[in-house]
Amino acid sequence: MTLDPVHFEGIATLARQVGDEVDDGDHQGFAETVWEEFLDPLIVDGRPVLEPVDRRFRGRVAIEDAALCERPYPESYGLDSGTINPTSYKNGVVMDVAHAAMGRVPTDLECHRSRTVIIGVHLDDDAVRFSPDWVMYDEGYSRRRVLHLQDIDRKRYTEGAVHAISLYLAESEHALAYAEGIDDLLVLDGPLYPKELLSWRDRAPELARQLDERTPRQVVENYARLVEGFLDRGVPIVGFVKNPASKRITNAVSGETPTPWTDDAALFVRLLERREGGDRVRDELTYTNWFVSRGGADRTFAVDGDALGLDRRRPPEEYEVTFFPIYDPRDDVLYTVEAPYGLTKEPEIREALRTQMLAEVASQRGPPEAVSKADELARIGAEEKEALRRMIEREWGTDRTRQYDDLRWGDGEFL
Image (cartoon, rainbow, N blue to C red):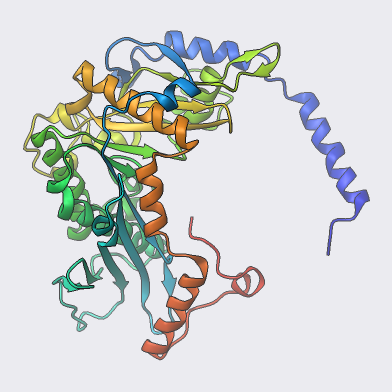
C-alpha cells in the first residue's frame, strides 16, 4: 500500500514545522570556535586525546589538478573482506563466512586470485573439535579454515561477535600472508586497527570481557604485527575510512558545551565545505592537517594505552593512530585516512600520503582504485549469500532461525 497523498502532505507539514524551529545559521561559527579553541590539543580528563601532528591547517586543491598529478606511489594494494552476514541455525550454531581478497594497481591477476576464507562457528558443545590448520585450495592460490569460537559468550552480542571476529581475522591473515610482497603502499578498506572490536570496551561489560579471550586478542595482535612489519620495512600502510563515525571530538566538546553534530564527520563537513554566493564550491577537494588520535577506540594503541597487553616491539608512540579528513563536494561526503604515527612523524611521508589519497579521491570520485578492486573481489553478492545459506542448511540438515521480519522484508544486511 502506498502512502496516501493527504498523509504525505501531513508529514511534509510537520517537517516544515521542524525546519522553522531549527536554525543552523550559527553552526558555522561554532565549528570555527571548535577548530580554533579545542583541537590544539583536545584535552579530556587532563589527557590529550587529539592534537595536530605538526601545525593545524585547512587546505584545498582543484579536483582536476589532483586527479592529474603524479602519484607518489604508482603501485598500490587494497585489502577488503566480505561476509554472508551472521546466521543462526536451529541446531544451535551461529555462523558467518568471511572472504578476504586483495586488489592491486596496476592489475595483478595472481594477486587478485588469492583468497583467504574463514567460517566462524559458535556452538555450545565442548565435545566438538575443528582442525585449526589451513587447507590450501585453488592450486595453492587460496586457503581456508574453520574458526571455532569457543571463547565467545552466548548472549545477545553473539552474532555481532562472530561477524566481527571472522571478518577481521580473514582480512588480517590475508594481509599478513602477502605483506612481504608489498613494496609500495597498502590501503586497508576501513580503519588501521579493528575498531569494531576495540570499541567493545565502551559498549557493554560482557563485550569488554571478550577482548581478554584468546581469539579476539589474536585478531588485534594480527593488526599490530601488520603495522610493525610495514614500519620495519619502511613501507606505507593506511586505512581508508569510507563512512567515518567517530565521536571523539563531539563527545569531548559536548562535555563543556552542547554540540549540534551527531559525529565528527558532520563537524569536519561544516569546517571543510566551501560556498560562494550561497552555492557549494564543487571543483575543489578540501582537507586538514594530520591529527594524532588517542580517544575512543584509538586509546588502545595510544602511547599511554595498554594495547590489550600485547607486546609492542617498536616504540609505543609509533603505533598511535593519525588521520586526516578529505571532503569531496561533488557528492557532499567526507572520508578519513588513517596511518600509524611511525610513518606520519616524517613530514615527507605525510605529504606523499596526502597527495596520493587526494589524487585517488579526485580521479575515482570515491575510495582509491586498489580498494575498489579489493571490495569488488571480496564482496559476496546477495544471491551468493542466499545460495550459501541454503547450501549450508542442506549440508547440516537444519534450517536457519527465522523471525517474522525475515518473512516480511527478506534477510537483511547485518549492521
